[in-house]
Image 1 (cartoon, rainbow, N blue to C red):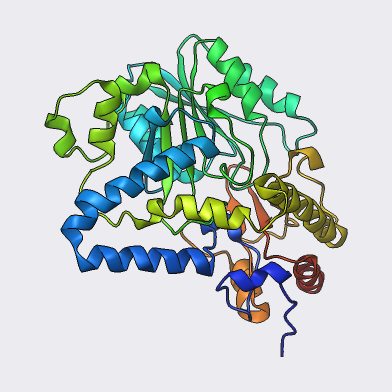
Image 2 (image 1 turned 135 degrees about the horizontal axis):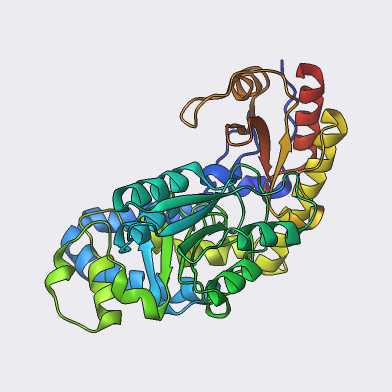
Length: 397
């Protein structure tokens, strides 16, 4: 009988299975009971009168979501549109760009594979080039990252895909400086903020990246399938939605066209996006210091979690503590286990879940020829859960 450690006292607000040690908030997030109840109310209203809800009520709530979310990430609401996930946001930008032969797009060797694949698709189709920036790893300072990226820029570099926080390795990049330096060199930045809102402070008006896309359903805890794309004013005429629909044939100025084309791309359930204001308010209320307090709490817990695990594994730190936020990854010992693809479960992940009820991602990362274990830290987690994981790792590795 496995003795499962308890979650924090805030765990009562989530529906997470009590028999599972859930250390993977970073993949899909987890939606609190109160937000799920609110979504059910909205869906009941939708099904009671679909025409009225979609034609009238949802439009009012949609505008409210745009307004409140824009304020949360300090963005120009006229350039903010909703998409199902950050991968869709990345694809939306890449499919809209007029790439030419020999143009280059930069990606980091820590980039999320789905988005990296989208870059490869776009460059191959256009006869352009994907330039992969190999970062020094383990990382000893943010300056190493900045230098590696800037040294990879050429006269043909048109776009750089940069992460706020890397998915496979859980590193908080100095994206504010990277964006500024790249764009001062004439390179547009597509900022992948899949791990953005709710895990790092965002000020898009100050950042002024050409494009920013990110998820709300991860660290803001909204229902699954709620994300955003922000397009800087001077780039809005270039970007079209992946699904061309009714709005394409309606006249309007550029800000009106953005709304007409992106807000209705076809029949879909709008409730995940409509829950954004409620989620910002409710989850933010769980800390007496609001979202700043939540982000600080998650960062401190993630650092403690990493230190607890590394005491057992004795593998090197992948980056300084200053580059950790709510995610942290550790290098697993080189045990000659064959690397699995992104669509296959790693055998060690399966063992941890089936034998010890631990839900934590184990990444095979072929670009480094290594495997990483990545923990996420959120309000409902407790330090005891990571201590339990460390005990299991000591036993199994």
